[in-house]
Length: 106
Image 1 (cartoon, one colour):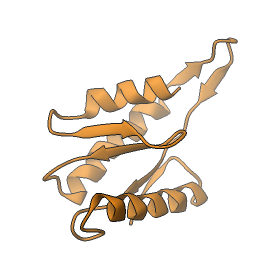
Image 2 (cartoon, helix red, strand yellow):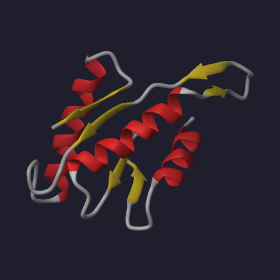
Image 3 (cartoon, one colour):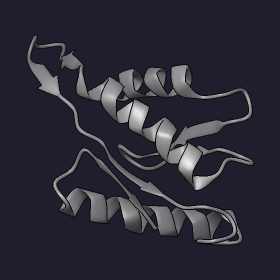
């Protein structure tokens, strides 16, 4: 599942973007010089792409994966990486509590 999500991130990322796994099933995507509106547009495409997939487990079970995405923008939500990750993490948990498969801004 994580490999599939990482592959989708890679296809939607630009050369300037940096993404990495952060914790168990979380990813961080750094999009330098990208407005919050543009970031939201990119993450909406990611949501749509993942929503159409059924991931098959090694046992043959089919999984439908949902994403909960939290967005934060420099310097609006933080002035360093730690603050931005904290702000986006809080927004992600709000997305999870909102029913999952959605995007929330910090």
